[in-house]
Image 1 (cartoon, rainbow, N blue to C red):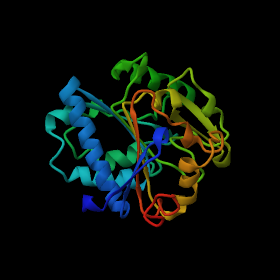
Image 2: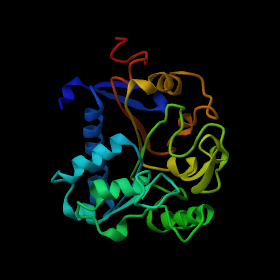
Image 3: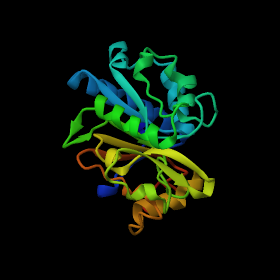
Length: 263
């Protein structure tokens, strides 16, 4: 892709927005973001910790990574991979975020299997799995001001404004004393595991990946509208020490005031 065609918008503490031409461009930017975060952390601290999200763009990012010659092998072998949220399904279920990532690229790159950390455990219930996942994060990810600081957390945004599995008006939005938690989502009548805002906002870098015109109106609300975090949980993401970026395509940007169609 041509990086000369990128548009950048600054929304202050709501984040910096980079607009690519299409979803493929966003996936390529995600690859560059992933590789840079991994290699920078490895060079500075000898290790990296990255949390992935589900969705079509992260899947495409993984496909591209599986066929790339970067990052370096040493960086891969010093990186721990987590997930910011997960459906409570086995890894071989097509709805599993971790399962898709494993099939798409994590089994095709030089990362040790013991450094891949899915949330789902068939021998546990959701609450126990969340507690164990929190303990694992605390054990592996170096803290900053008492909170484990991921080098990079990827997030998506749903057309209802949710992110990770922090859905509108759910109890998970109010959890501040835990890093991972089960969150019941009434509209799906299911419980999902999710990072809490405490953990997400402790990251060194948080990057949203958003594509498609179907999310344009909601993205405009999140970035330009009043703060209504119970209705638009993506507005809760405000890294305490790190950066917040949005990598989006022209479809998702189509209603933004400074976007490519509002120049």
